[in-house]
Amino acid sequence: MELRLLSRSGYASLLRFEVEKRAWFESHINPREASFYSVDGVKSHIEECLSQYQRKAMLPMLIVDGMGEIAGRINLTDINLVLREAYLGYRLGEKFTGRGIAKRAVEQITQLANELNLQTLIAFASVDNIASQKVLAYNGFVKMKSHENFAEVQGENIDCIEYQKIVK
Image (cartoon, rainbow, N blue to C red; front, side):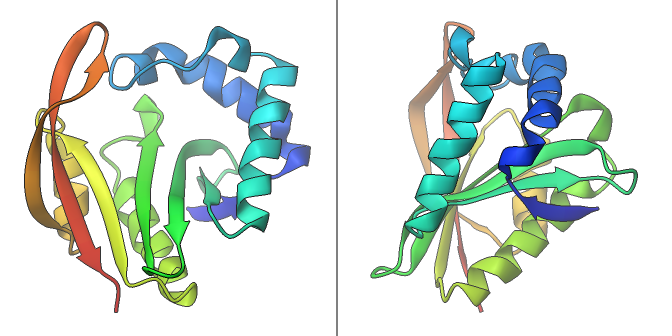
């Protein structure tokens, strides 16, 4: 498993990944706009991510398995170099869960955050997403507070837990 920076040349693989995993992701997080699921939509998404990367506001990464298949996405967003903090978000395709991939991906992106001289990473996990809570705890994230009605998924309000990690 390795992390790879999102790239323009990988748009077809990313589109395939997103289309194939769409129902799985939408059962856990808010859906993307329908226009995203097209060549132009994914290319536009990649351009926006890379533009933010160039401005040092985002680190958009793919999680790639040993066979070269996209297993998921992991990003640092809203990077603030003055406050030395960023938000961590990640998601895996269903067939890649339960194999320690998320644990290793979070560990690796934490190392990258350290190289960017970030001090604090902030992440959120649904109170029902025990797997993500375990991944964050395994990687040294600490529960900070709960947020009621933090997001809406499939028409239902969900509560989330905010986690933080001080990057060494």
